[in-house]
Image 1 (tube, rainbow over the protein chains, first blue to last red):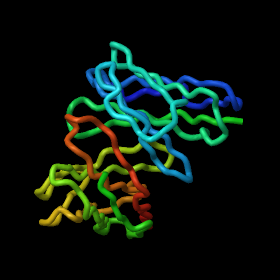
Image 2: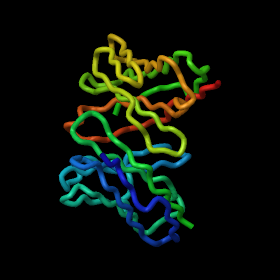
Image 3: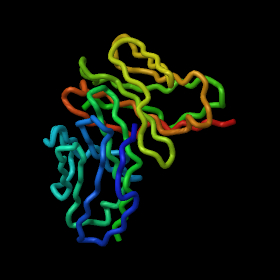
Image 4: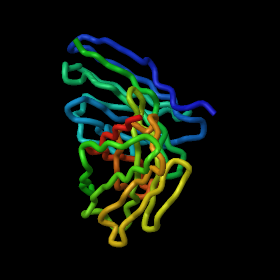
Length: 111
Length: 112
């Protein structure tokens, strides 16, 4: 069974640009959640999607958004990038048990 | 969200048991206690979870205090591969969604 796949693995963007990250969950999983990891703030929850609807949301500005497609794949978008958005972005999928499965993450660098 | 307190770091010798404590005195009566770990350069990995009773799986054991205000993750024989940051996370039943509040965790060093 394939795990959670995140693309791309690495990304370099310029301040002010926007970026879209992709996450393919484990087959059959309908919940996809996103996290930001930085050295200063640690792992922080961004939002969770379930059956194409946002079910939970963390405390991030509106520049951070996401969506989920009918096949459960999810994308997150960050608009008007700031230097502080440089981070490892992780997604996790869950299939109705208490366990979440994480991808390897996308390393975003904003210059 | 329930606040958790974990030691910043702990050290263990290889093949010895490790007891990782977590205080979660404000936990809700219906919150599960989850443990995840993050190995270097990897995404977090589920370890174990429980509600009231002690739990065992192939990776670890979870001992939950009777008043549920604290819990202890037990690695029975630490290996070098167990060196990671361990997070204790109270969370409501996943039926209401998956939003893990990771906190700072405990960095476990395992020495040969």
